[in-house]
Length: 133
Image 1 (tube, rainbow, N blue to C red):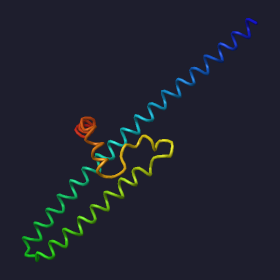
Image 2 (image 1 turned 30 degrees about the horizontal axis):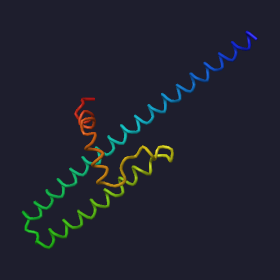
Image 3 (image 1 turned 180 degrees about the vertical axis):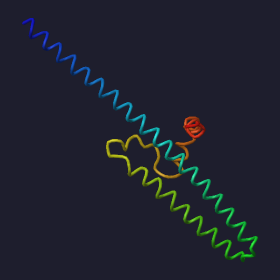
């Protein structure tokens, strides 16, 4: 009986250790996933800043070169459409990259909710982008 009790205690300890390791690994996975979401959405926001800068710069150059108001407005409209499609595709692609098991960790579903998610975690993203690596 003494040996059987020792074997049972060993098995219980082993299973407990494995369960705690699994829980710790799951928590680390979710934290890494959250960090990758923040970095990805932050990079997309920076890309949007660059898109808008490029649009403004191009429109200024068109006006300086004497392009008609119609051409400038057409360019502006086409660029806005392209930016809108890029926002939708990028967020949809980011969400679709998550396996079904991790779909519940995604806190955004479109560009506006992704920007709210980014603003809620602004200090983390700022620290990441300002860190010298």
